[in-house]
Image (cartoon, rainbow, N blue to C red; front, side, top):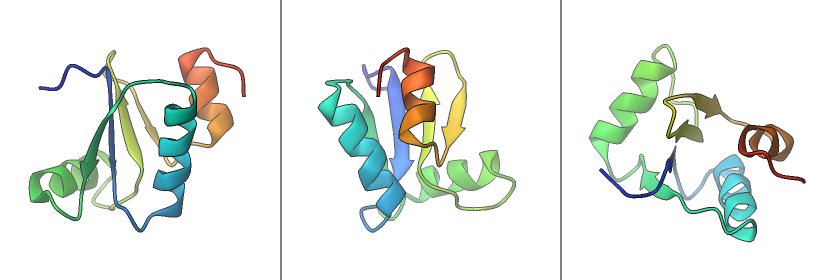
Length: 83
């Protein structure tokens, strides 16, 4: 398990993943990045929690909650940050 409290599942080609990563990076919010193109178990997890669909980014928080393809506003709301 990683020490980061947020785990983002995604792929380098995914625009929404790049946007979410940029949002977290600019806010200095630590997270673990798991590339579903390079990790079959991660891809299987994403499909399992999204009713068989590979919807990315899928972001898992320390409390076990998830956001799937969140907007920056949704991320900010979850993290208590200002956009």
